[in-house]
Image 1 (cartoon, one colour):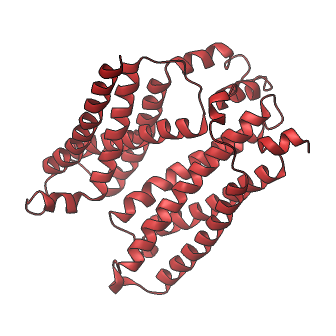
Image 2 (cartoon, one colour):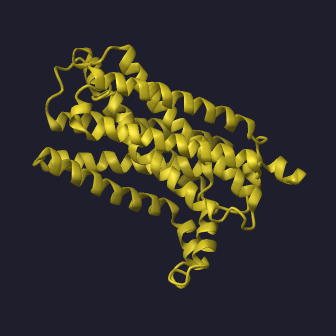
Image 3 (cartoon, rainbow, N blue to C red):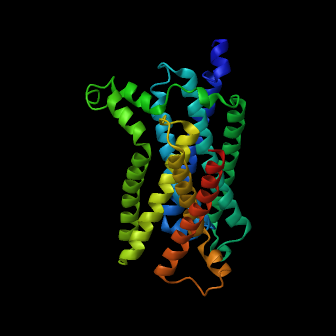
Length: 323
């Protein structure tokens, strides 16, 4: 391995960290699916309800999404742009590992708080054992990633992105080479936010459709609210992940558009937090127990609108002051 490869993190250390993170993500996913999809096991889980379950439910889908794109890019590991690719993959691996850590911390909070302690049994012990093992694995991954850390500011010099690698891979597949072109990539780069919203909406429709069918939901307002909440969650996930990992290199955008995007993302994150802590937030407002769907909609989506607006106002004021 050359000195350049060592400096850019494109060697064995980077691959070791990435594969270790993918293995940990696989372990995390297996345990998360067990504790959330098996009704017997779920009934004994300390983190079966919100606010803890919000983190688990989101990570179950977000972690494998990140793992999937990281594995896909492995097929282009030796393609041109190795230093950029290694840096971006390490950053995406950091994001995936951070998401795992946030979920593990939420689960530990449920354990320490004694949530559903009366229902704990041998399955709970299994879940806690898995929690300990996953934390140990995540700690090892974190140490490996720290050792691969690169100097600040290197992201500003990226000339390759994940989308370009997708085109590079598809060009080597006879079935796809005619459908995936540089022109398609240019279009995606110009409409990145729209692509994020569209993909998030598709994921939300699938998740909410399955949830509504399984839970027997019939209230149109509840279903519509769930669609908005899930779409908002994955829009924020796509935008933040792209900011960290450089999946799609976006062309320059106007200041007004940048402010609008940041405000929307802050609002989307606020909606998720309001959903997670809805009961506590409702009690702070001095209201009675939160039981009606209209109240839930106003509380959670209202929190997102307020936070988005509060974010936009100072950004607009600052922009006008420096203009």
